Picture 1 (tube, one colour):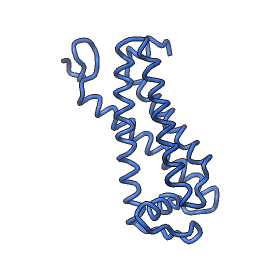
Picture 2 (tube, one colour; picture 1 turned 90 degrees about the vertical axis):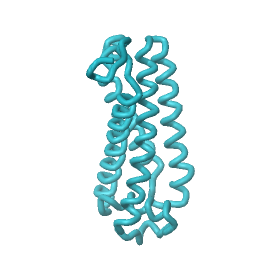
Picture 3 (cartoon, rainbow, N blue to C red; picture 1 turned 180 degrees about the horizontal axis):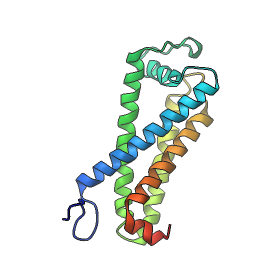
Picture 4 (tube, helix red, strand yellow; picture 1 turned 180 degrees about the vertical axis):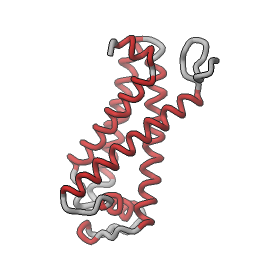
Length: 169
């Protein structure tokens, strides 16, 4: 193993995969948080309105969207859950990037599973959270999720020089 956490074959070890996945997850989390904050400000709401709304719904408050109070508990609780989900998703994506790094033919398998996981994760958010939470537009959830997936994928491709060179990006 060399100093960069790679095995002799140039592939990531588990520790490095977790680090890359956590960074990718943080990128996805931040992308969604910033996107939702911008949407809230444009709509004339406080930047953390959606986090407060989802935190209240997640932890049993289920307030009317127009009456959401910006309380630290629901906002922080939702943010922790949101960050944890993105960390797990990021680690899974890093594992797929490492798989794709083994050979060009596995790149398509990794891409398929990345899209599959992304679609199901955001569909679950839409199906489970949005119906009980008025004021959360499906297009906003999908746009934020798509942007997060693209930026996470960009980071992971940039983090794998062999993968990047084999794709001539």
